[in-house]
Length: 113
Length: 116
Image (tube, rainbow over the protein chains, first blue to last red):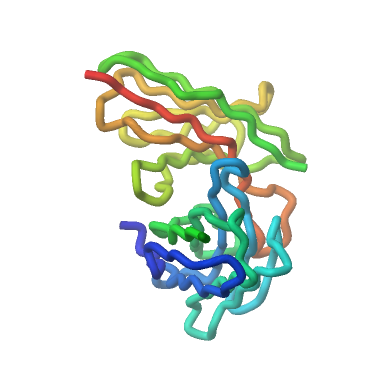
């Protein structure tokens, strides 16, 4: 158990819909990262927050957004969903700064039908 | 930009065989290097890491040495077990990042199956 929790574990929704994925980092970790794992793209970095502020953006679509709240949990919002958004979405956390170890949650499997 | 090239899979070995999974990287500066493992239906677990040249990371019988001259971080294990069956990812952290930005760049993953 990494200490990172993600909800829900599975999500099935229809095209055009909007969903919210939730992540709680390990106790004491200030950085939260979101990654997408799909068969064709592999593991791709989406976005990072550090202590409530956005720090880095990767291959994140404009239809996707995220935020980190004062209690440090994070939410990833996916809107206008398309079939190609079906993937595993992982959240990871780290202490931040020069600590490069990231601890991953179990993931949310999103299926868009 | 940064990139990680990983040995294509899948790899199938017999129990107690020697394992090598190749990983090479491209990065500016001196990245930290990682191996993550993903068991079926689970998230990624950090297996081992190395933060500077010639460092050797080790855990659970797995080892990898950070080779700056060959830009490599190959994963090895002397005697694999059925329980080692999983997908293995090589990754690097952005070495020229600003404070608080340590995103990981992953290889494509290598699926390892160990048969009894």
